[in-house]
Amino acid sequence: ASLYRIDCWGAPYFTANSSGNISVRPHGSDTLPHQDIDLLEVVKNATDPKPSGGLGLQFPLIVRFPDVLKNRLECLQSAFDSAVKSQGYGSHYQGVYPVKCNQDRFIVEDIVNFGSSFRFGLEAGSKPEILLAMSCLCKGNPDAFLVCNGFKDSEYVSLALLGRKLAFNTVIVLEQEHELDLVIDLSQKMNVRPVIGLRAKLRTKQTNHYGSNSGENGKFGLTSSQIVRVVTKLRESGMLDCLQLLHFHIGSMIPSTSLLSDGVSEAALIYCELVRLGAHMRVIDVGGGLGIDYDGSKSGQADQSVTYTLEEYAEAVVSSIRYVCDRRSVKHPVICSESGRATVSHHSVLIFEAASSVKPTAHQPSAAVDIQFLLEGEEDLYAAVMRGDQEKSLLYVEQLKQRCVEGFKDGVLSIEQLGSIDGLCEWVLKAIGGSDAVQTYNINLSIFTSTPDHWGTVGQLFPIVPIHRLDEKPGARGILSDLTCDSDGKIVKFIGGESSLPLHEIDSYGGGGRYLLGIFLGGAYEESMGGVHNLFGGPSVVRVSQSDGPHSFVVTRAVPGQSSSDVLRAVQHEPELMIQTLKHRAEEVMHTKGGGQEDEDENEYKNVAACLDRSFHNMPYLATEEG
Ligand code: PLP
Image 1: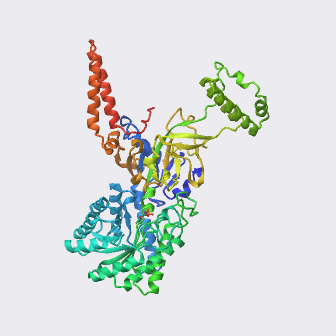
Image 2 (image 1 turned 60 degrees about the vertical axis):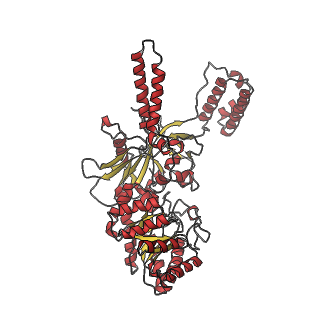
Image 3 (image 1 turned 135 degrees about the horizontal axis):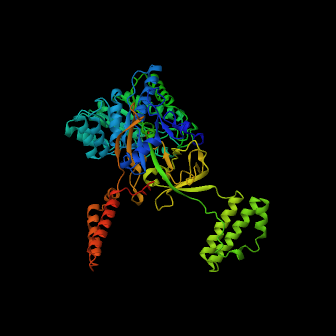
């Protein structure tokens, strides 16, 4: 298990147990009387066919642990509470969850519910997001913030104002100067007193990928001259008291607390200036950026790791604000953060099968194919192999292969002869230990659907680990190749900068049993950003809680992944009509044969119809072979 550094990136939630499986401790390292959950047991329960007592879900499968979510929220809150207390800070922390990180209804509802006692709120960045946020906050704490970010039109602003009418604590954050005109105009028309925030474009710049929108040339936020104009216009409209929040976001995965402190201090200065100019400032919203340690190295290496803990993050935010405000004799503001990645990443694990592995074939040539004449004159190769000279053997093998490929292109060699030579060369390479040890594992997954941040420009590396057999030494190294017909659909880079992953040989496992891998820490962004390339849709999902009952867990919700019908519908096809059309065609083709075979035709038609029904109803991924 140490090969995969599970205890570095997985603590306190994931570890390997004595059966060699991943075990989950959803409440963190709490000493609750619960047993740890064996992830393999959960997966079996979810995917075993219904007649054998399982839930019959198909792979890939997302396993969510709401208890992990609860623990993350509580840890975030208590890190800030401790920092506030230890530094004698004069106000409190009140965070929001940016729903864009994962808009799944049950995740958002859980966050509202778990965070209700400490007024935890939501952040929205578009019209549907504000709609879902309002609807979920109906059951939340009335003081929880609903921070409305993103570019806005009059409909968006009206929705945010409507939120105030409905007694939600909405704050309209101006991302662009002209949004202010909409807010002034619509709030008067709708007779609502808005709470306004503004997003400042800071000069502090993050240099990793996620910081590309920070700094003076960033995509979002107001420059200092725009801020001054906003204040003037609000004053002229008699609405300066409505300006209450200052927001900034210097990018996700802030690597160090020194950069964080620079950004927070710069923002705190702007906050103090707004107070001086007469705004009724109350809240400083430090945006997202609280990072997680994907590789467990604590190195702060760009996009992969951060050098601080939750507690150190909170300490840095609180102390920077306190220092600046104290020097300016400004009352300490409420501190809000929009931590998405750090809140939801840990709580879900994506499980998928490695369906087969492609090894270079290595076998002695068959006597039926004459290649003897090709090996004449290969004394150098024989001699190198006999001496165990790996370097020379590799060279001669390459030369032999090259000669044979040319012979094939000239039409002198058949495909059988070429295949035999390739097999023989692999056999020789294996014998001298020079065979390429990296195998390709075909995975029943779409990288584009399930880990878009990996193939996209971010190149995010997630911990990928077999969820069983961790007590067995992996006999191979592999790269992962997905189901899509796309050469980018592969994973060839892994945490720690490795170009292959230690993996078990599938053939040696119980005569072809499943080999299951998990992608961890992918709960934020991956589901919300994935596409349906090749029409591979979203995975099945189970929600799992710890239990005191006879099993260590209970499945509280099980949802099949998107079916072929679902993904077809997403691209404007009409599955019901398609089934009808295809069945109609089957009827026409099968019933026109005639010749007294009506019964047979009818049977064949029924088989075809059933096959069509199944194909539309099932998920697009490879079906697991039973047994
Ligand atoms: N707030 C804003 C405005 C963002 O743009 C983002 C993400 O990019 C976040 C919050 C969430 O950031 P993170 O996931 O790093 O916490």
